[in-house]
Structures are given as C-alpha cells and as structure tokens.
Image 1: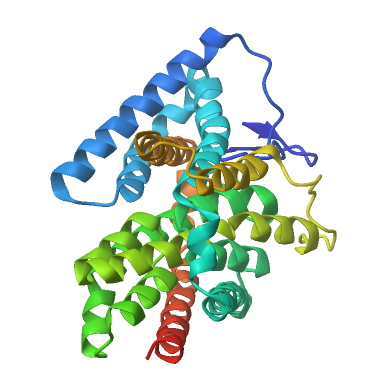
Image 2: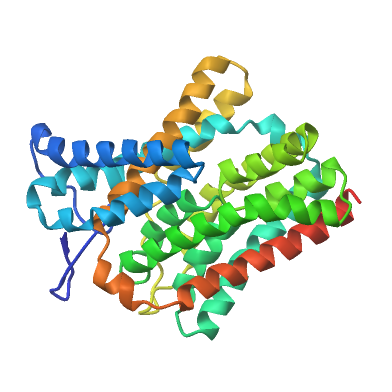
Length: 350
C-alpha cells in the first residue's frame, strides 16, 4: 500500500519504476511469506493452464484475483510487492532472449515500417476510443499499447510509466483480463480468417504476428497455420516486443498526466537497457540454445508471477464498479490491429 500526496492509501502493483511506492525497508526474511504465496499461486495457475490448455497469463490473473482477500494480510505485503515489481523487471529483461537483431533486419525495411505503423495506429486507436467513451487518454494508451505490443507484459510496464493517478490498478486488472481473453480468441479465430482470405504462409505469418496480443498465442496461431507461417509470425511478433522499450520511453517523455504535466521519467531504466543488451548478445550467437530456452521459460515464469501478485493486490471493489467500457477499448484496438495487419500483409506479400 502507498500513501498519496493527497492522503488516501492506494494499492500498488507492477511498480517497475518505483513511482507508486518507495522501496520498503525490510529484512530479507520479510519477503518470504508473500513470495511463497505468489509462487504457489503461480504454480497452481500453471497446472490449470497445462491441464486445460488455457493461457498462463489469464490463469495467473484469475488465481490472483481469487486470492485477493490475502492483500489485507500485512505479513504478505513485502513479498507481493517484490513479486509485482522486481520480478517483473527481470522478466522484461529476459524477454530480450527471444529477440535477435538479425531476425528484425531480415524482415526488410518495408515490413519493419509496417510493423511500426500498425503499432502506432493501434495505440492511437485505443487513445481515441477511450476518450470517446470518457475513460481518458491514459487508459487508452494502456489498453492500446497492450494490444499493440505484447499483451500483459506491455500493460504492466506501461501502467508504471503512466502512474497510479492516470491508470489505476482496477483498470490495469481489467486490461490484463481483456488482453488475455482477446489473445486466446485470436489464436483460434485468426488462422481461420487467414485461410478464408486465401493467404499464403508468408502473408498469414505476418498477419498473425502483427495482430495477436501475447507472444505465446501469436506463435501458437502461426505454427497451427504452417511451419513457415509460424517462423514468420515469430519474427514479426518479436519485432513488436522489441518496440516495448521505445514506446515506454516515448510515453515517459511525452504523455501528459491528468494535471497537464509530463509523466515523470528519469531516463531509460536499467531493465530496458538489459532488454536490449540481452537481445544484442543473443544476436551474436554466444548464448547457447539451452540457455536461451531457459531464459525464455524464466521470462514467462517471472511475468506470470508478477501478474499473480498484481491480481492479489488489485482493489476488487473498484474493479467490479468499472463496468464494460474499458473492455470496449480493448476490443476496438484489437479490431484496428487486425484490420491494419491484414491490409499490410496483403500489400507486402500478397
């Protein structure tokens, strides 16, 4: 929990930059209870995901929300804060092990420009729709950015740049639920749409990689279409993941708060530097395949644990009072991303 300047106490989660709450002065053993709860809850979510084929992120969030009553136990506060902040930072760093600079270059300049254009227009569509529905541009950037880049991990990172006053924890939880549900639906529906449109492997792979929210669902959809489409989808999707850092930087410098001031952003943080550094190292081929696979699995585990902690710490009453309008923003941005991706795929590949 964190005291605001105005007095009230707000729940804090996914605090990458430390702008929601100061790092508590605690002993190492104080982290234990909360971390144990977060880890056990994440393992339960992973079992459910494996058993029923459901997305891990969605299961982690739902398990966390089911355990929301534990947020009242102050003995768990330090460990849950550690999971939602520090583990998330390291998870984003490890995502860099999925990316190589060569993969991005091989797409060609036209495809890269198309990916950037799709990302920007999708994010802006979220902002426009959110403002139309009276939810504010900040929430639009949160929802649109999550759709445009890499789902839940992007939402968690963007929320910390925007800050609690511009995008609260209830809105973040709604975005995580909506993104996971939309990504799961897309993994099933989008390959069928590609078949209906008569797309070849390259066009289908580009469309799937450029439009589906989460990495796992994008790759799953691509490889369900064909091996070649899966390879293309992986490269396109990972190119979107690589754009997370510049989007964070741009939002940090230029996105206005509700008071008209720019969001606080004191340079590129260490976890963003680590993300690009690991991607560059991965590009050299110096990282053995086994280590790269382990880093990818580690990133998924850390991000899932952060999502679980976010669910536990989310203010459920505010979440229930939010209504359906936030989900309409996610749906609108999703439709925009799909339409733009189909158009770009047909233009680039045919």
